[in-house]
Length: 499
Image (cartoon, rainbow, N blue to C red; front, side, top):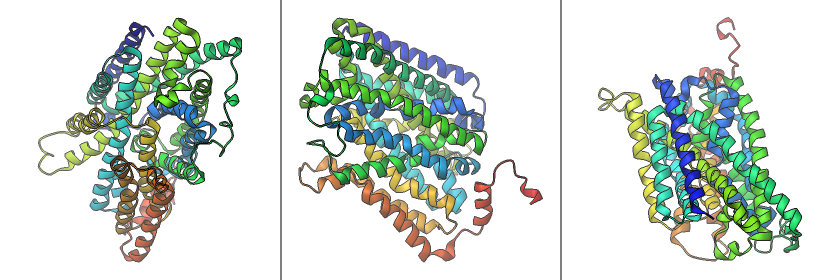
């Protein structure tokens, strides 16, 4: 590919991102603007922004790579990532908005009246955010290197810098506009090249992907995951969505619970349309780029297909895909940075020593710059791991901790602070240690799948411990639990003062 096209694409996306973010800065005035966009984001804009931040490097590049490598079994990833919003719609969206919180730790404190639970939730938000930011930064480096030939660190540092500028300048208000724009850019970036690639494939007489073994049959890929892995992926993706901090925080920006539900419905449609496209690229990769499997470069299949199918005529299409991939890194990284910075900023603003010296907005800006340092350093220091694998760990951790906290906190009045802390610790240790063990142990033993895909046992562990310990400590149920539950479940249009 002509590197000039790739460089131009990255520059244009960067300039557009900073320009739209600057517009958000003009309308950001209050603390609520910076943290939750003054709770005034309408469903269509909010759903586009959610699609922008949720469709990360794992969606844009990773899904196609997994389909290329393992076939139809890997469709459970996009199915789970989409269906997770259905569970979020049913169990969490509206009550969470009615809680009036800014962050997950805020909700935990409102529901359980405990600073200890708040601190535990804060630690987990930071850890999940870092675990999710790492593949975004690494994916950016891979993309820039693939299309321009520059060192990997260039793309990594560039994404981190742009994200910090956007979050620091306008907070949630800025990144809402940015992420909405980036969803439609990513959809266009995949859709337009797909039209030309399919046309070329139909015209050149190349065999279909199903000619290469039985990779399209569920549970029949020769080297694919077994049934345990399939169910573990389903559990992690279905339940992890509602526990991802950067997803949850967007529902605080809706005007009310009804708007939160409408937003979720629109998101389901937007994600369903989008995920058809990476699957198509993975299938075409089976025909034109099977060598990427042996080379260990399956994540690059989306970017390499235009030139392999169309020759030099694919340069412009590759540049468009580069723009979409870079937008994916920027939008998801912005949402993650905002969610982590919001939590840390809240804690800084609550600190007795700092409360009189800095405002909540200043605390958010300081936290945004600081919270990017750790994942950026890790992305530069450690060996690159498959994008979708790293994201799966983040989903498993969220499903094992925040999912039990939110579901039980919203629907079970018997949850206690002690039970919540115990469940967060059990699920967090179970799922959180998995990537550390995975990185430190090089083995092909069968038991490795329990570390690579921990959700099947870590999620029941988190739920089980939270319920059992709450039952043991039932005498410590918050005294105001009835009032809180009424607040979570009563539609905004009902006048509680009139009974």
